[in-house]
Each structure stands twice: as structure tokens, then as C-alpha cells.
Length: 422
Image (tube, rainbow, N blue to C red; front, side):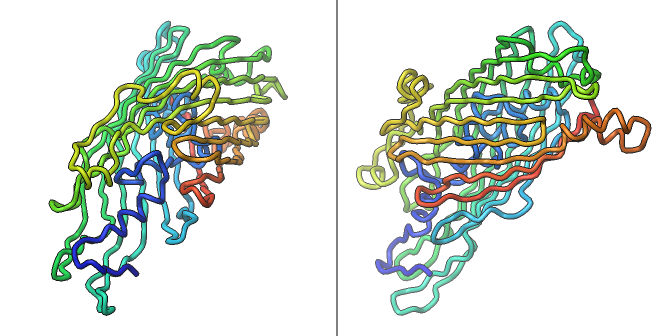
């Protein structure tokens, strides 16, 4: 219950919402700063430069959409339960994502090109907020929430090096609460707007080819092999106009951010019962995040300054924030790694620091059916469920991640991937 003691304005809900996702500065629409993937969050949300098969991946870097759908042209990911954010007000998150893609000319082309479409829905529910005057009389109540629908388009091309690029448009509704006007009149603080993301991803094979075993007909190969890949990624997110909840309130900057990083993937494929199993895979990534707004909402309210955003990299320092993986007062540095065994079990861990934040750690765990199905493939080749064994991968993820600085929140996700159109 929130009370208005000044009879002029109240920023209570705006402040509460901005505290949910802590960043370098206060910015509007905190849902745009909350990473969505239960899988990637276990690795400190390093989703910009490390190629991922996660359907939520394009919300970290839109180029991830083309990478994922090159191998799994139909995939979906959803939260089986609403995620409760650990905080005093206990808001909840729910989300889902859908990816579809196709390849022009087939995989056997010398330079195959693929296109992909992605959709994502994400909602932050703050619950019902009640407004009272100083005597305790109820002025009104409102459901406080934020949500967006995201629509992504991406493409990729492979000629030894794999290059991916993508765009993501988010249509956002932000309704943090009411503005209390003189005379105890309530004005709905509600804003709808669009925001853009774009990103690039480059994957360079160093030893072997990580993705050969993902091609149709290549699950049974005459030999096993190691692989090592290096990747680079950049994304810029939440590009759009400032948010103004009321004509009498100052404008608030969007959490526009630049992200730059690199990734390393290594592993070993091994033949077991004539099925090529990814015996082990290691992933490692370092990423720097910089919030590009130079002026906070409080300074705008005080001096009337216009909102200013930095350029391409902002304050990111390549050596300090990426090579040394150290954060500073302006830039967050994130490091994450994971290990997967037999295409069945996966463990991940990471940390992030900087932007005025001390080090926070994350962890994650996943289980999937792909490795089990590959071992069953030879036994069940002429039954109705041989189709499932060949084309289906069902995965469950759980992770802990700091959505606010004081408490960890636990994320859960279920992913369903089909290769039927390959």
C-alpha cells in the first residue's frame, strides 16, 4: 500500500520497478534489463558472443536467432511456472519464445544462407497497487505491470567462417502505477512504445567443425573428432525514444546498452554403438555491458537536461573489461562457463561485477534427451517413434540469477526443438 503525503506527485512505483533490475544508472522500463533465458542466466547471462541453441538467445543478441535455426528450424521455449523475483514486493515473470528458420539451397551448398524469424513474449507483474491519501481513504488501485512482444529477423552465411546478423523489434507496454495530481486526482502512468535491438556474431573454427554432427545423416560417422571454435559478438539494445509517463513528469531514458564479448567452445565427439555422441563440450565467454545513457532521471528532473546517449562501445575498455574480465564503475564485466556431458547433463556457472555493483555469482543446471535418443536410435529404427528419436530434443533448465542486488531468483525453462524440416 502506497500513500501520497505531498498531494502533488508520487514516484513510488517507478522507484520500486527501477530497483528490480539494478544497473549503472536509473532508467525506465526495468523489464528491458532483465535477461530472459533460464539457461544463459546460469552463465551470468553471457548471450552476446557465445553461440547458443537457446530460443531466448535473440533477446541477448538478435544474431543468435540465425545460428540456432540453422540446425533446429523449429523450436519453442517457455516458463513452466511464473518466476518469482526475490524482493520485498515479490513481482513475477513469465515468458515464452518461438523460433523458425530455413536454408536457401540446402546445406550442401558451398556457401549456404539461412534466414530465421523469432517471436518472444515477456511480462513483469508487480501485482495490485493501492493508493491512499494521508487519512487512509482509498484513492484508487491499479495492476502494475510491464510486458513486451518481440519480433526478430536474422540471417546467416557460412564460408568456412560463419557470420550472423539480426534485428529485433520490441513493442513495450509499461504501466508502473498512477501519478497523484493536486486535489488527490489520479492519472494513469502508462506508456506504449517501440524499441530496437541489432547484433552481429562471427564464429571461427580453429580445430574441426563443431556443427558437422548436427547435419542430417551425419549422426553416424566413421570416426570421432575434437573441435575448438572461437566467436566474437556485438549487440546494441533498446534503441528508441525516451519514456514519459505524464506531461508533468520528466522524460526517462530507455536502458540502451552496448554489449561486446568473445566465446570459446571446445569438445570431443565420440562413436558409441554407431551413434556419434558429443561426449563432452566446454563453453566459455567473457562479455562487457555498458549502459549508454549519460544522464539519470533524477538529474533530468533537477536541471532539465536532455537525455544523451553514448556511441558504439560507450565506456567499454577492451583490455580491462573483456581481456581481464574486470568491471569498473561504468561497465559491467561478465564471465560464464559450462560443461555438458553426453548431450544429457549440463552444468553452468558465472559471475558479473561493475557498474557500481560488487561481484554476483550465478549457477545453472540442465538435462536433455538428445544423447539418450541417439543411443536408442539404432534399436528403434522401424517404429512410429523412430521419428521422435531422430528429430526431437527436449530440455529442462534451472538457474539462479540476481535480478536485484540483494537476492537471487530461480529461473525454470522447458525447451522443445525439432529438426523435421531440415
